[in-house]
Image (cartoon, rainbow, N blue to C red):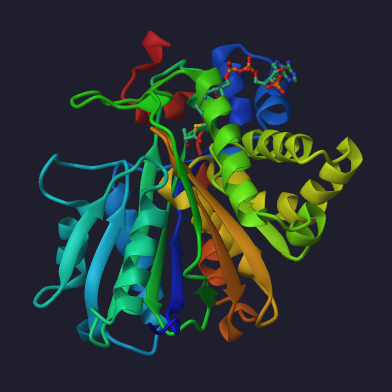
Length: 365
Ligand code: CAA
């Protein structure tokens, strides 16, 4: 088995609009501190009428392809992790492949496991490479989602959108260890029944499941080793980000179960985690893409060989902890230009424009 496969190129696409959570707080007549301090949120990335999970995925894929030294003919697999499916049968990858002009001897499919779907697509692509089944071809993995809740749902301030595309080939951007730490435990914490436009959530249960999964995955990673030495050996720790405060809650829970003092855990969070959430605070929850937005942020400027972790969580629930090592292209971080361009070009909407975008007339507010 060759482990010489990893992320060769990254492309990110963020939508053209955003709503500051303080605007939403005003609309809902809620203290804005609940959203900013209580949940740690800042902006909700929103799609215009012309944007959706497909256009975001296509934009991210084109950017990843444009800075890769291969061509579309070298792609033998496209896997799209999403929970913004358009159809129960036709995979979202077909819409994206069509727009990219990708057809022929290509395996094309959609992966669903809530927010874990993008990570599963990535693992499958890596395992396809490592097994030799790829016969020298590369994979295009995309995590793309538009996360919306019902109007006035407690999850409304955590909404967001975005896409991350990764070409799986030579590990120039990052290498990923074949050894990972999965954990699953069937639960109804967050789900979207067939035909429903928006998810159903049992808020407290979803928080408890996320914390339990964090504990279990990190316990497996640490094994018999010293927990302080092990966790401090990573430069950064990235997490799925349903809302930034969830990540802090999970880290505090982890520290407590490992027997660390609150000060030690706080320092772990400050030194390894906090910075990785910077872009997530500007996008909101992008479901499958959230973790990969955080990983892309963490890799910026890292020296080759620097190790980080990535914790993926998908309701239902399934989780997996990955070990990632920066490659030579992390230092120059070409994908930073995507995020800077999209953030500087995007326009803010006020609460009335938000209601219109969500299909509700102002009079019904
Ligand atoms: N000033 C400052 N803080 C305030 C405040 C104020 N005026 N009012 C409330 N707060 C604080 C609360 O004390 C609370 O903080 P703590 O949890 O630290 O006590 C925080 O703000 C949130 O308040 P509530 O718990 O009352 O919030 P809520 O019940 O209205 O909604 C939620 C919270 C349940 C997480 C909701 O946002 C939600 O349903 N989100 C979607 C589900 C989710 O994201 N779950 C996460 C795990 S599941 C997952 O990861 C998959 C996924 O992507 C969805």
